[in-house]
Image 1 (cartoon, one colour):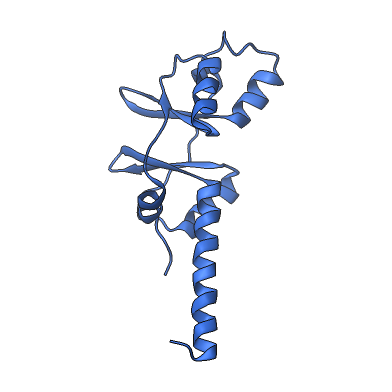
Image 2 (cartoon, one colour):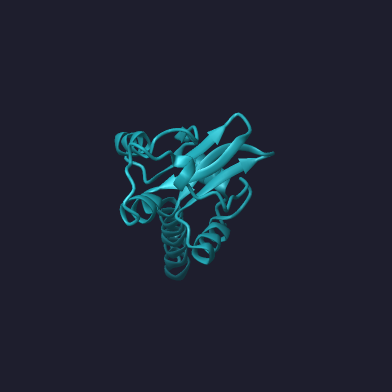
Length: 145
């Protein structure tokens, strides 16, 4: 059986860390470090606006010679988002992440942000599914039930 995003969120939790668009890059980085996460979602009263990740920091701040304390996340966030719904499968997520070269997928249900999953979450879920399948096949082959 293929796990869904909803099941994944039930296991890992649906806590989402967000910042408003005017937050400085430095403040966003502090929050990311404090929570030990690689990205924060950027939201305002109208909903999800973008995502700011370690990759955005490396490519749009460091390499461009910008200052973290003088730049808002809105200026450097990724706004062309790839999102999923809670009924998407883990395999669907892996395909989306690979095709679009993204490491985080916001989860929207009826237009409302309900979670975020990372490439690590997806890989862990796939490994768990494969371990279960191997165990079931071994039991079947050896006749143990």
